[in-house]
Image (cartoon, rainbow, N blue to C red; front, side, top):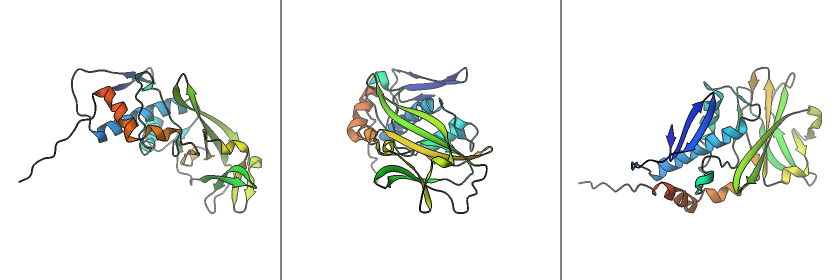
Length: 231
């Protein structure tokens, strides 16, 4: 599966990515390039997320379920050949689960002047037998290459602070602009659909027109589509 100079295939059950080159000129419009870069980033994110246990139950495979959701994320563009296949960026909306249980509404805020992650459960939600999986995402820069590292643990209900009709996890870490979080409810083989909330804006400099143009130069630039004369 080629994608803007990136070829992806499966080998022994693992996704393998390599930078590919071709002498043949092919169409590379802005929309095509953006979609190919989204695919590259989706694959890079999945590689990192697959190190932790997840639940994606609404598609034929967990990867395709994740990819269908991750395609909604903004495209990010990298212009360094050495990192193009592996760079991953922390941003709001990275999916960590998909299932049939009601989603937990999550937002960053403060409780008593301390940063917090606030949760609102669906009205009438029954908490019996419910487990809470808590995902943390950290933006790291390793050998000048950005990566998102994910971890997951089970949260005990006793860790949550009641704040009016909501719950919260409270701590200074929730003010960290290079971290993100998501709380997933799990009952038996069912889970809620959840995605990362974060204050991180590091990725934004890789979403600009300038970043797109610099990355596109690696593949000979963007294809200009001439206007058709009508008459």
